[in-house]
Image (tube, rainbow, N blue to C red):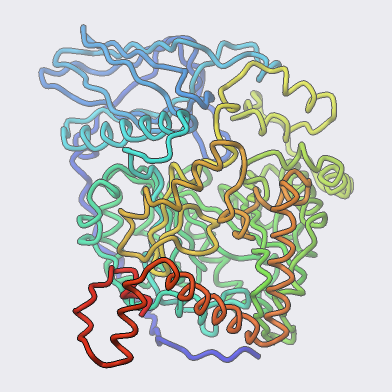
Length: 634
């Protein structure tokens, strides 16, 4: 059994009083009603979203006022290349906006005396993507907010301008960016209430990586120090190795995120999702991921402890308190298929349907050959490497989960399909998984209006027959072909205690936590962008074994032979290092250390002279000024 040393002891008081009611932000306190007029279709609910489709034009109406106001609105565009624009007219005032792909917010000025806002797009969503729906469709629109807070207006405008600039730089294949990250990975808290940790969590190793930043605080002051990196971001993704509900400053941070117009994605184990914590979440733009990974208490005990029933009760209270699916916060229930739990995928989907969660998230266990976790828990021995499922089995599980979710009306997000193309590349395996679902699972009544697909790969994944997949290539372009195979290094930066990463699947940090500004346009990150711009992976990507895009490309044999060979060599070496209890890795690092210094000695005479002086004791260290990087190595 893996040795573990507890770091903290947490005492929970379940009888804590509810927090006092939050004071609404100025833009919410001054919010006024907005009505949808002609050009908008009836409200629809699809997965997490409540929205209305707009035709080629639409009208929003509201009561007039003698003050200037601002209208904040979330719009979803299907076009990937900024080619769809929205023209907004109100009382003689005209604004034109480039629309980014997916849901994005923007803010408009409503002049004094105006009682309406006229919207018009330059292009509609091609009917070939929704042949069963004869309506004219262009964009999806959530319920707008009309308010009188000029500060909020400036915040949202700045974010939208940065997002558009970021996409333009990506489409232009620029490697050095003037924009800042649209999505910012953050590290809220570094302690956890599950002791010992989850069987698949490398707690000790992760904490060792955090080094001098292991106790670095994350407070509102941190956000002020980040400046434009925080101000311009739209999405915040908490990637901390810890439980955020244990934070003392959590309420203040949630307020700061809300006032800054951010959508927060965070993961919790759900074990301290008390009534008090539930109240903190209600109505906030939060995507809450709850790691459960089991459909029964017995399997949950193999992975964590005996708190399964309590967590399910917590989730029922949360979903009931927020008013059901589609209301904030959105609740995502996470399942990572592995040997210990793969037999419960059916039970897990049924649990999600019963709880009425907003989405089931299927997330593969990281294919990390160097992880050697070995636990005995609840009569079960969990050995990380033996728990990993073969790729073909993961695809079948994805197919089975997709069919179960379709029949039970559960929204599914399959992270195996990160970057798309899984259904197209591995159709036979995926279909085999779907076909494995018997006829004993009830199919819910179809909604009056079936929602259209968000993008080309989603359209293919919904049908998956060979004729449709072939037809996808003939559909009108939405600009998807202009994007690189992975957009993460352009739009995202993860500033974590264990280092700075250019993507959510990065294997090794590119800089230390406090060097995030330099890392954003560092030589390595620019090289990664340059390689992706040319349609190929950088060696950094290839070394990130957890990346689903790289793994799918490896399994489909679409990578260059040299990169395929490197991946297999790395896997072989990781296994060999594991067999030698880490001694092989130590020898490798020692050889690299000696080799790098010998190499430098041949090209830097001052470096040699410096060490000669040190050996002779003839000079002080200051006599040979080393650069910062060299000082760190010494």
